[in-house]
Image (cartoon, rainbow, N blue to C red):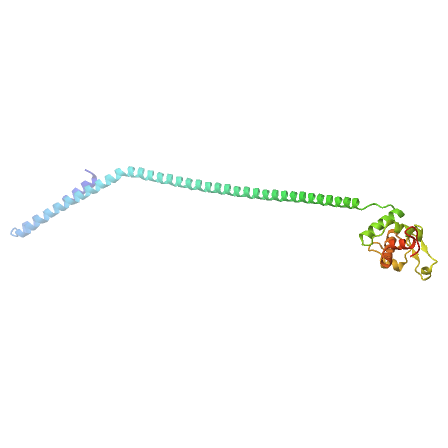
Length: 280
């Protein structure tokens, strides 16, 4: 029996003895009082039951204490296992969170790189397109310039081919004047101009008559066909305004004759049958 149980039993016996002594004294003082004796008996029985209950309670408490003491190592192991599991779960959760954060960072870095690569590719494509367009524009302009230059050259060549080259002499002057007069509505023959030039100035474009009536008036006859300045001014063509230029002088004289006599040919034919000349 444990020390606790022994103390409980000793206390119960002491209480019981006290009650017995009290009962004997009461019995000695009043043997006639049966009710008192009965009461003492009843009290003793109650005290015995109380002592027995106290002993039982002490035994139950010892059993619980012994049971808790025996369970303490088991509970400590369970607590350690639970703590270890909680720590492991937290470590796993922390690792999962760290892995998720690392993956998110890696995904963002990949997305940023992809966006940067696309932007760089788009910029490079735009620059190439601009360069290609500039090159195409330059090539088109070069081709257009070449075409324009060729067209101008062709036109110049055609004009040169279409425009006859006239000799710088009486024959060339007359031929050029005839072409211009015919193109401007004053047809005139080569012979009429030749006859007039030979009889008026002997074919000298710089001839000036300083002795006739026109000279006396201050307007001498000048050039191949001996035209005075006022008449020249009235009958010259635009672009042919030099009285000393043999072609310009022929043009003005022929147009004057056409206006006054119908044509220079009429003057020559009427005066000497076309084979001689008299001043007009």
